[in-house]
Length: 428
Image (cartoon, rainbow, N blue to C red; front, side, top):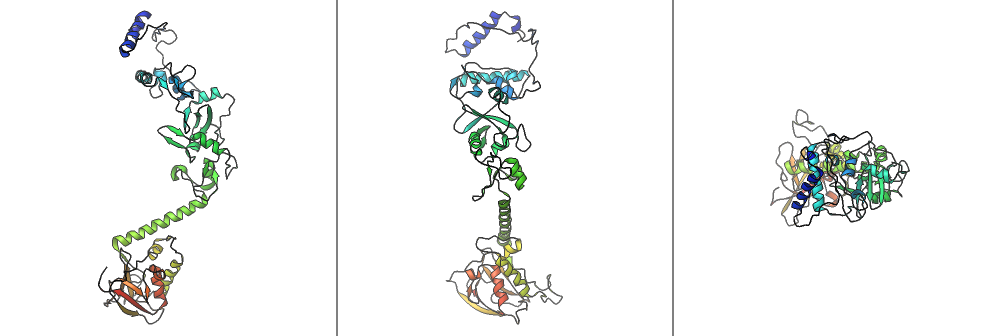
């Protein structure tokens, strides 16, 4: 650049045309009809100066300065396919490396790629894609417009709603906060492209906020039967939802509670299943001699009636579509499997003296959800020990009347004698 400033205008133009003819060797590059040569270092109005952002300017101004020009439009605001006529390079056209020599170099490469690859520039606007345009262009094209978000109606950048962007599709332009747009269910943001922002704005005009009553409330509760809709800030204030923490799939206060209950219940159910599959389950309502809940002689102080009542109460909480609400309930609610009718079985009777007497028995469940037969807590060998139980008092295990552990407890609570049918030709 310094050497070029020492050459005449004609010599500079000759070098530039020679370079162009080398690059476009298959084309006839004519001599320019007119030219203007600048000398950056010696020009009294530049003297080697470089660009900077004065008060009131933004990095969006770089996008304006680098935008190619067609016959009638800037490339940024074009609404149809047109041939670009003029391309710009220089450190003043790059927002990544402004005011630096390598910024000028990189911008030259960018402009060269635009010339070689985008002689015809097609508008990126389509039925779904919306272009982000510099705010200064929006202001110049809409001098009387209020600078408020088209959805939440608040001005300028906001902490909750984000930066105020200007969007354009074809000839339409709107202002929308980044979060107001992004959190609208139809809007997608991929690789810097915004889709369906205009569609969201159009839909929002007819939807009122459940909190403030103003239109533009595009964020609806994800529950299929819920009609509550909100603006971004209204949704967080009214329901306690946090979009950064909880995600885009919004739920109102009522359905947040429902989701939390379902998630907690599923977690405890899965935990109970894990215990069953990893270690098997030995029912813990009855203490073995010397365990907590027994006296020094090993007699269980806790009556079975008390323990089984707990099981019955838990049983009343459950149905086929209801998940358990705690780990103890989830264990009690584990479903039991029915044994095939082709197996060989035998029966035995176990008993206790009174309804309030402890059974002095224990049972377990294996990972296949088979109920394994009763073990004597005092060490006496029983024929049912370790065997798969088929039925209790002629009620088949796994049937509707004896579907889970809770129901086993209930039937044990009710009787002093139990007729236990068990498998004789197979073990767990």
